[in-house]
Image 1 (cartoon, helix red, strand yellow):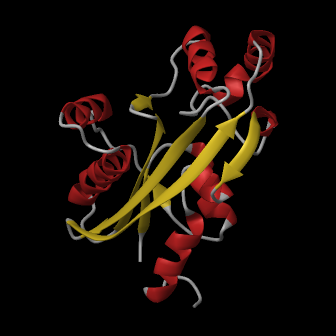
Image 2 (image 1 turned 60 degrees about the horizontal axis):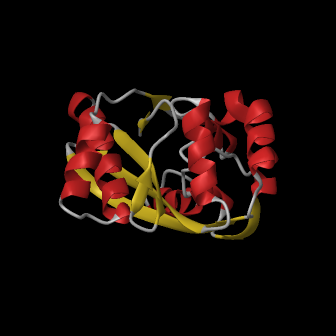
Length: 197
């Protein structure tokens, strides 16, 4: 069974590789901002937005590779009613971490598998992240050293690196926080006979 990861995320690819899966990657051309904005305008939940984005990516690649098992993924960070996107500049990252500090935010990591143009399976992982009440100096110092590493992270942090220092409490598994709830995926693949049961 050919498996295609509908993502260019290096972290997700590394997670699948380390788990012993054989797969290829493909970059789906999906207007994520338009989907997100339309769903927010309809007052959709962060969980539903993550799911819709993951499905759009899987469907896009499945249309081109109908026989393959296509895995689409997306992650949404929500603080109350506010949904954050990946920062484009250090100034945006500073503003985002300042908004998150001293607060508990939520990460929703969605996965959808498509095959033959149809959704076959979906899962949404959830994590609660409580950030310490960081000073402006601590935020600036963190981003000076970590910007290149975290610039493609929706939360402006990687808990597997120095970003773990930003938090006072975490509820949820590390795979969900990294954007791919790996245990749920492996359980599904075991049921399908793709990995050892």
